Structure formats: C-alpha cells, structure tokens
Length: 362
Image (cartoon, rainbow, N blue to C red; front, side, top):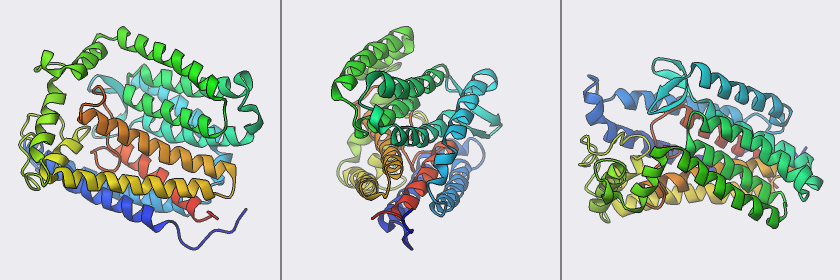
C-alpha cells in the first residue's frame, strides 16, 4: 500500500467546517421561535452543536484510520445495517409518519442513514473485487442491484423515499463508474421508473405530493402548503436577503424550518448570495472529492471516494430541488446544515473516510 501523505485535503476540511458553522447558526435562527415553546430558545441549537462536535470527532478519527481496513469489515457492516433495518420495523419509533428511529427519548439513530454509508463501503469492495463481471448482466449487475434493492425495499417499508432514493442513486453511480454496459442500466432504469410509479400509486399521500409539486395552488392548505411557504421564504430573500434572524416564514408558517427546509430560511435571510455561497462550498467538496477518487492508489479507494462524494451530492441536489420546487416534496436533510444527529454524524464520518483516502492520493 502507498505510504500516506502527512496531511489530508485541506480544502475539504475547510469547506466542511464552514458548512457546519453556517448550519449551527441557521439551526438557531430557524428554530428559536419554535424552541421558545419548549422553554429554551437554544433547545435545538444545543443538540445540533453536540451532534456537530461528535461528528467532527468521528471525522478526525476516521481520517486517521487507513481506509482499506473498512474493506475487511464491509460485509459485517452491511449485515449489521440490514439487521437494524429489520429491527426498526418491529420496535422502531414513528416520527412524521415514518417508523425509522431506534432509541429512547431525544436520543436515537436512524438505521437507514447508516445503511447509506455501509452500502457504499460494501459496493466499493464488491465492485473492486468483481471488476471483470460488471459487464455481465447476470454476474455483475443483478447481484449488485439486488443487494441495493433489498436495502431500498426495507427502507421503503418505513417508509422513507428520500433516503431510499439517495441510496439507490449512489449505488447506480458506483455501478456506472465501475464500467457496466449502458444498455443494461437503461433497461433497468426503465423498469425502475415503472416501479417508482407503482410506489407512488400505492400510497395516496405520494400522489398528493406529486400533484402538489406540479401545481401547489390546487391544494394550498394541504399537499401544496410546504412548497408554497418555502417559495414565500426564498422569493422575498432577493439578492441580499432580509438579514440574519429576520425570516418571517419561521414564525410557524413553514413546518420544521430547521430541518428539511432549512435552505429556504437561509435563502430568505441571506438571499441569493448566501444560498450561492453555500452551494459553492458543496461544489468545492465535490471537486476535491472527485480529485481524490481519480488519484486514489487502488480501485477500492477510488470507488469508496466516489460513493461518498456521490452520496453527499445526490442528497444536496434532492434537498435543494425540493425546497425550490424542482422535485416533489420528500423528507431529506441538507448535509451539514439541517438539524439531526444521525444524518450529520453519518455525513461527517463519510468525510473522514474521504479525507483518509486523500492522504494516499497520488
């Protein structure tokens, strides 16, 4: 194995810390009004700060663990994730209509979040060891998508379409960069669209989300409410924004503004310039992450870096697409910014692995 460099990629570290800082500030700004009802305006901010510190500790810990160690534990990690996905369906706690939490009180984990990273590690191992079979439909594509599809199915039983979409999107990305035949992906993609349509038709609330996305004004107090309030936040923000802390939509108009729709409040308070700066920080992570993937010393490291960067990028695209009305509303957080323990610590753990790979990059 190539000898590690003395320092990891500084731009990835700096971009991540800046996004975390903005996230903690925006969690306070967007949640203080709601938190006052709990008797403490810093209720959500304190917890986010704890999650951020734990995540940073995990990031620096993973940054100093040689990444090929995880290749040995890939199968064990994925099996553990599958077990947790089954357990959460049995004894999990339901939050916002999804039975996706394991834990007691305010302290809990979402197994689906950790399954995303577990799947990336496993697929990086599987694809790097079965490179010659990836061009085969039966030996390469079917087993890979079968494993991913099984995890997706368990996540959809919760149900959690947003997390499932990120998992499958990342899996398809890894399969694509591994060298599969495009015609196989196109064929399966068409089947996937049919299956996705079936999932939507099987649940009336998903149909309402689609119709609400196409024309939210058809049901402004129902399925279109969140999108309308989100656009009411983004629009008045203009170029410069209303000013930090000056959001109007956080006053119980936009549901949970500190979570999935935190980007709406950020755009309202910091404007187009603030929103663009945040997206540029994500682009910096994407750019440097792909450089790491290209220059990794082995295929496992290359695929692992690609999967981590792809996971972050896909989640950002879906979240920002939802709050701006480009995609139907689905529950998914904005990495490093939205309130939440499992998602935040998972993403920072993944960045730590990416930083370790960068230490070996040629």
